[in-house]
Length: 234
Image 1 (cartoon, rainbow, N blue to C red):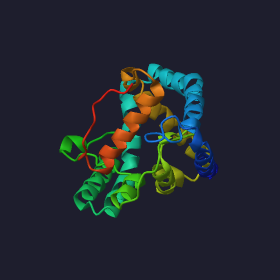
Image 2: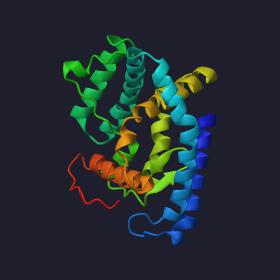
Image 3: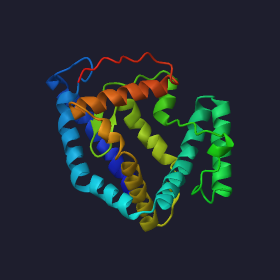
């Protein structure tokens, strides 16, 4: 409940402040809210530098690879609930069937998702979120937006976080301490997966992440059918 309320407050605050900051933009076409986004990005970078990244590095150092992989598999399995529902909302019935099959096999034979038995069976994950669903039905993304603590987003994807959170199985855990422990473990697991990926970042980190996020979301919304501009602007 507290996490949901905090996220809602952050989203509303982010949208309101971003609207005020629009005139400060240095690049009105690509990033009209840059005057708001960069300070929030710098704040997030500080939190990551002094808290999240050290935790992720420590977690990776002390956790055996097999256990780390099991944790990642467990949370990937939970995400297939979201994938299943959003594939259904987009009438992607084959993908929805695959998501259902993954949930069934990994939650049973895979010991509650700790072991990914579906992928070796040829049942690939079909990631979809509510932002993609809204995009599928024609809702524009709106300008690029950096949310406090939550990172790169846009108004459409920010709103979608509320819907995806509502169907998150972790949210259904009754005991508050257990639920918060799962939220924390998922956060550390997610950050640890990015440790190697961040090595490819070059130039202005803010611009690199912004452009990568926007291209990735367009790629996802259009089911991989997009024209990619490879011009290096940073």
